[in-house]
Length: 526
Image 1 (cartoon, rainbow, N blue to C red):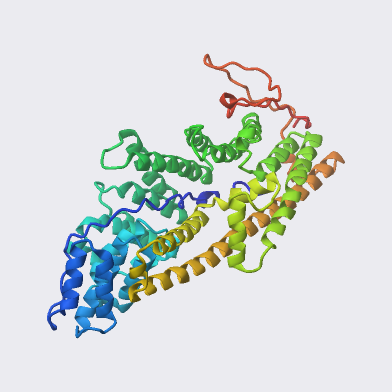
Image 2 (image 1 turned 90 degrees about the vertical axis):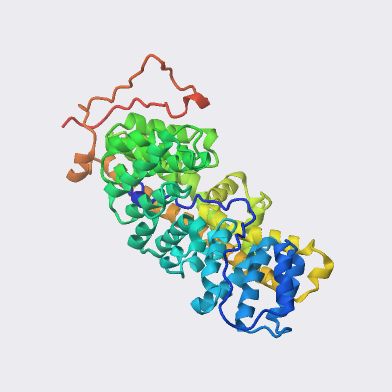
């Protein structure tokens, strides 16, 4: 029976969403290439139009330079390419700008504006999700580029982004080095500190991980003004969960519980903390509380969240107390609820083989138009809100938004060569993004199906053990794991601010998290 599978690395890393688009400040610090011929009148006019924020007109003139309609040399064409990337960005076509800057990145340091492009990649990272490939482009740069004066305003942000890149590649030492370079005065410090912690978790180094998370908790108490209030709240909660998991992974279950119980009921991770804490209570043989948490998770308030393993944990607890009928009832409860769901999920992923078509089907599921029954709909949605998957959907949405913006643009501009390039890039990237989103959604649902299959096998094993125990065929090793009849029942302590009454079948929100079970062992005395 697995306990909090992959708990030590069950990270909440992907809870970072793309921020609202903001105009990138152009401080004019991009240098002009040394030497070469003077720019053409067309290029000069394009730059002046850009400076006046007439981006549509500037884009047309810049495209003329790149198309060879002027006598500009290679250096000036590189300048035109860089300015076209900035221009398309300022027009709001971020995917189009990404393609232009990507071409500059691929040209390497030989391109006169290769270094200056890095600042604009940082700007794109604020409006595009990771699935756009933006981190991969940033990751091609040597960290030494950040010493350039034009990077001063985005230096800490780029340390953080480069750290994220190396984290994704599994180069953890390099990632940690970059995260620790972020200045404490930067708004990115709290984010970098969190990623430093989870990178240590991935390295299975609990002590430095804990130190990083504790620093975030200190920030949560002191609330320094340089950090956004929403960032402090978000990362404080994430740090609490990670601290709990670190302590659980080191078998310090009491300390893990202490952190799990710091989360408030309005936290999006509260239900997960209850489930994970139930394992910690189980490990401490405080099964009154473990069962109470599981009981809470059955409340209608959590109908959109599913913890199938909690049902099997309940059966294991009853088994250890030799309450065999209740253990079998719990296994039956799991089979009755999750076997049909597994079949329904298999039907969902088998609906379309083509990933792009499956994405369209997923869109219907997300808008509750797929015709699924209510429980299957909720269960599929529980995996479709996976943070990485949501970022992939966000990338498709961004491309769709830009295509609609293109269609609403001035008709005269839409007929220009630069507009055709932008449209082609948008449509190509959207097609690729939809296929990728469909593929990822299918993988997530298949992973859920596989988990249910594994839990189903666990349920069979539990049932066999219970039946053997009922027939008095329990092994000596298994008998050692049972709770003796002489075991003193965990006391249910009531303080002055609370009182106790029996559960009458109706859940009340202010009771959630406070349920306790009286459970007595029916095993032999040891």
